[in-house]
Length: 154
Image (cartoon, rainbow, N blue to C red):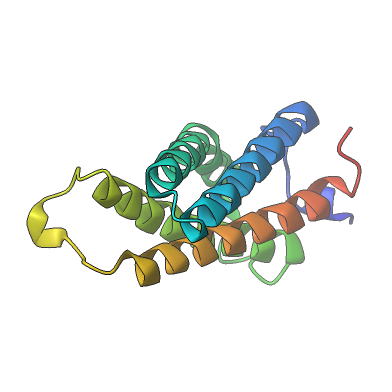
């Protein structure tokens, strides 16, 4: 049984998966550009770039990834968690869920859209943790793509 047979991805045809992968990689690139802007002291540009990346990622997660996980992976858990495709998909879902929730909170806080009582003064540890979680989710997503579809993107 091939990994594609083990993880039924009929809901995610290859073109949709390629688009999803491209959006995730663009968001990761934007987050990296935003990080570099902060290092250069361009905080307003940093905030805008990070906000766009967080919104792009959240839209993809809410519009596509949750449904795909619930339809294709969740019904097979925990029975198939020992199989590589399901383990990778679940790892990606966990890292992604934590990352999108935490990253969205940081973005909302940076744009002063959460109550003051939830404020934090030193953004660096929160932004760094959020960025690390996003990169972990991105990496597991790329691994999932490779496991499900192979190395080709066409």
